[in-house]
Length: 487
Image (cartoon, rainbow, N blue to C red; front, side, top):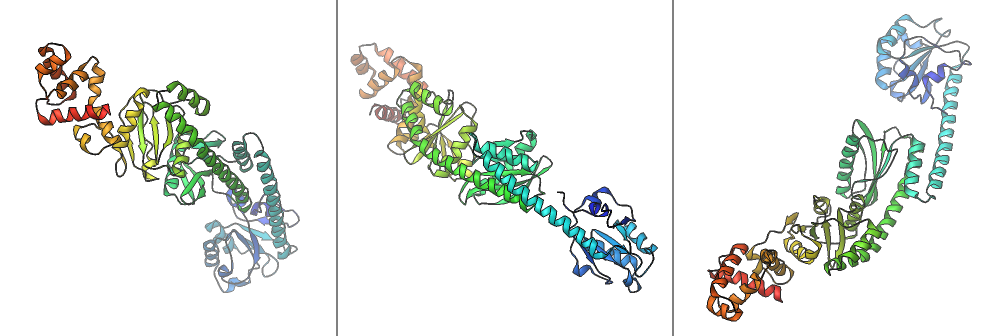
């Protein structure tokens, strides 16, 4: 049942109404909430917008037609009906001219049609429309609930909501990416703009509803989840939503919120499996880790990878990373590691900015490496964790003396890596040379090689390490690095 309009009222044959002025089709199709009658010179204080006013014209000896019409237009009156045969036999010419000038629809009400009949017709149409909308809302909620019983409950419910509303509906996950969209016809530019705006709402961390513009369209967006633990957002294209449609949307909002909360619980359960995969990787069993990852998440990031260490492993952060990884399978992997979280990034992938902007978790990144050196890369990332934001590890001999433990080990491995990559026995000869107080003769005797060979190897090692091994500082750095790596 369509909503009451001026056009529908004028088409009622039993009322015998006649339109007098020229009216655009849009005005005839606009909502008509009520029909009121008054002969006051200024009835505007007692009127609401989207109503039609009926009058017999007795007031025009106390006000001009132009002033009267201007007051009605300013108040938002939808139309003016003039009852003929009571005060005047026909509509006054100056009133018709004023209405035509102001664009206010003017229609004639014959003497045989009571004003009450016109008001009752509008009221009956409004009641029928309200009943139809309530019936639609009950039917739509039932359809959405039945859709939620399917094997793919959330996509099915979103699709049914889009069908019932006749509008685009999108569900965004905690990462601000579209998880489900129906129908799938939103232009890429609008989708990117909307995703950016939704991410801003999620970054705020506060439950909210707002109207956003993207790609020339308006979208109503409602976040999902509680304050500080937002799970995503529901977006609907268009802003013309009445109370009944809002009730159907609320049903889907509750359903989606519950589904995302459950997904969060499952993500927490997956943490142990992810931690096991990380242990397998750092333990050297890459094939085992890869087979588990393929079965559970699709794949691991391709080499070379960068390790990231995130200072924290809060539930909300894990939910975000889970959503981020699900939209980029094979490019990012994460796992809990004690009181921190380790992220593995594939080629070309950057650390997700919301990790430190939305969750305030500092991120340290390693240099690109292979899975064979993942343990060392994690040490590098751990050593690079800043006080805020993100930082990439940059090796330097001064890091050797900064602190003991993983940071020192990462620095030592990074410093000696050129010797490892060069191959041969440079590292062994350097160690022996330092153990023999930097004496070429004693080192040559201990190794059974010529002293010129020792001298050449030490010069080459110094070049690769970028250290002046003729100085105390250079020898101390090399000696410390070798000792740390041997422990």
